[in-house]
Length: 598
Image 1 (cartoon, rainbow, N blue to C red):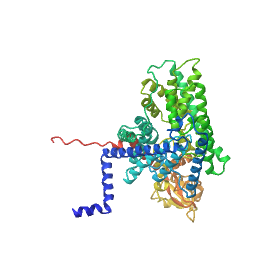
Image 2 (image 1 turned 30 degrees about the horizontal axis):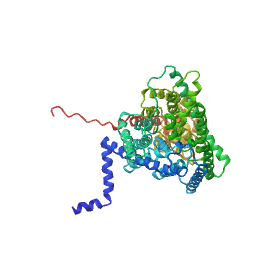
Image 3 (image 1 turned 90 degrees about the vertical axis):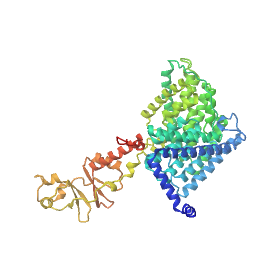
């Protein structure tokens, strides 16, 4: 017994335990489901903690009240001072981080697309803290950025501690984000498909168990901590008039363009704040002051707008009021994002969609009256789809919110119409649009990081058939008589690249024996660097039309040779690997049948 206790106290025990757990996860898929459930529990705890922290901060504006967007009146001096002071604190925080050269945090979509699910927990804590500060001081922005960031970061840390496969870490990141979103909306199905559509990038039957377990565990945690929102009752009817269906398509298209304008306006607002204030740390304070001024007109512009959205679903507003609130909320959201507050557009887009649906119902009422509740729910799904780019998520959120098949069908139609319109007219969601502004070409969480991780230096052949560029053709023919390489790399006396010669051309009759090899040289200025990624290498071969290219360093010294055939083969192999990961085939394990007679 003493020897056993000493063994357990040894520093090698944690390492051995991690190795044993890693082996279990790699051999039995149920252990991966278990890790997903743990990720869901951690995501639920994050949702509960961040929600409580935000509600405590809201009391600075409205002591004793709940969520800000549900208020009818606010104290003028509080609503002007608190957002401005909160913005000042946020600006100081960001300036402090910039002085210490902190790297830009990686969100779950970018982590899964480029980094194999690797996320920094420390950076994610900063994002969560700034999101709480932004939403808590009343900025018109949602909590979903911080919630999904923390849920995914804890899941990523679990995968990295256990040193799991790249595909398993990416799956756990999706599970963490799914748990956070499902718990925040009290909608586990919507949370699961949020992960499938945005974080993981695809759906596979084998991935359902871990993602579902994460969302359900997160939901249980939030309900046990009493931080979930009460159920909302929407007046609905399962019978939808036939005339409503073409009108709902129009509503979906209209919401798509509202979403596009909203996303582009947020980027323009950032540029405007940059020109107005050169001091970056003062921009959130100015934005908070402007949002506070808008809140004097209507407090519903404050915070994410979640309570205001639920109130308008139960009691839809008339067209004039809805149009006023739509303009105020959209302006407050654009100002908040442009000023540098931390958060997302998902929560805000739900409220804006409800208001857009109410405006649409009022506009068409003289010609074709539609149920107001139908238009508000359909507008909510359409505008949120346009902003986040997840139609199935919004369809399931409508189902879990209204419990009405007819309402869900209307949301499905408007969501599909909005998704198609945004894809053809704009091509980006809010997250991918911000990636595009930073120069990243990311459209979803589908893994494309391997295209950048695999470089020319890893694929090239360092041994090359090379000859001096001033050597005569006749001498080169004699030297290559016994072996026939496909390509010959030419160099000068200092091993500097001078072009390439195809062996077929070298041996042809047209090549005069007394001429130097440099007279036959091709691709003199078409080379690859060892740092070039696979995607750029494939593009270089397509652009030049060459079957092979030389690899040179910064001084133009020859390092090796890379052929298009080899690159395309590796590209096909990696695509097949990614396809198997997306299809879940990695997790399908077959048990061989026992021999006959046993």
